[in-house]
Amino acid sequence: MNNRRIILIFSLLFIVALSLFISGCSQIGITSPALKIAIAVPLSGEFSQIGEEERNGALLAIEDANAAGGALSRKFELVQMDDKGDPVESAIIAQKISADSSILGVVGGANAGDAIPSAQIYAKNNLVMVTPSATATELTAKGYYSVFRICASDASEGPYAANFIVSSLKFKRAAIIEDNSAYARELTDSFKSEFLKLGGTILAEEKVSQGDKDFKAPLEKIKALNPEVVYFAGMYPECAQIVKEAKEMEIKSIFFGANGIKDTEFIKVAGIASEGTMATSVGFSLNKIPKGPDFVQRYRNAFKKDPTDYSVFAYDATLSIIDAIKLSGKPDRTILANAMHNLKFDGILGNTSFDKEGNTSNNLVNVYVVKNGSWKSVN
Image 1: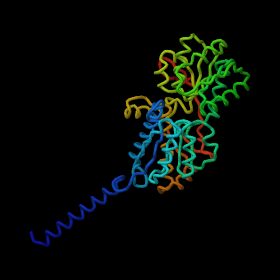
Image 2 (image 1 turned 90 degrees about the vertical axis):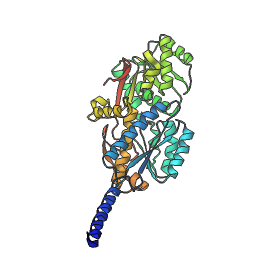
Image 3 (image 1 turned 120 degrees about the vertical axis):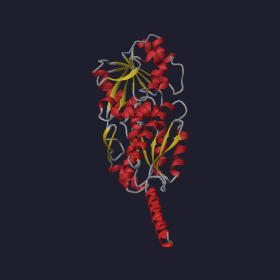
Image 4 (image 1 turned 45 degrees about the horizontal axis):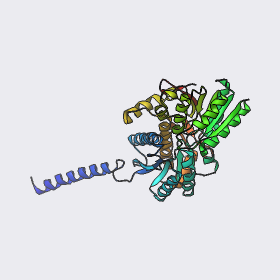
């Protein structure tokens, strides 16, 4: 083999190697930094169950987006932050996320107490925030341009419960227990207003606090009044204990809550006493929507358990940011906030967009009951 031929062969090999290298570099995630979306939810503490379910939903959305090719020739990455369900910790994390210019949007917080203080910080930094489960109307009523809500608000859920109790259960005598949180107060006000409008009577209003363990005193008052239904506005840890104690005290009233109690953990803690408890929750029953069964199966495959409403809303919240990044055409926070206002996307819950205040157009509420150890859709 003469020198000229050797040079030609090596030249061809070099061209092939260079082509392979360039081709490899064009694959997403090899040379370009990831498109970062943060999730700030409680991953430890009392509400860690909710946070884990939302984190899993977000992870599945990121996995699906990357399997579909990512965006802007880059992969997506989920940055996980534990706000411990604490408003102060939530605000600290919001500052950290806002200061990291590589993070384009945030999924969170999980409830109104965490979401409202952090929303102010995200809005100040023009950083898109989409809450999967904070239902307080106050969150989006403040006029924050970059703050969005993927679930219906308390303005929908409280009145829906009142109408169901009067129209379907035919009950007009109620007592209310609320956990004194911002979430509970708004839910109570909207429920009470509609219930009274429909001719109902509120026999008692009792307040408890998150973290309380003994509810004998308020339950004794309620037992003496014998209401047909006890409307609970708060979260599942306290409601589970209240339902257990009510069962032990032979209180016959139906307990009815909202999305704060509709969780598998409520049933696990309350046990047999949870049977018959009812709750509204934003969204659909998954087996009644076209994309529901496939989502349930893929979630089971990934996490070895069934998804909850929190998982679904976190998936769609994450998907909204992903699709808005694609719509933006470049990784820029300001352009992304504008894109969110013009976004129409097809999530697990169906076609969704946001109004000028950042509220979802997909305002859907459903009623569930605990039957044979699990939440079952009523309507």
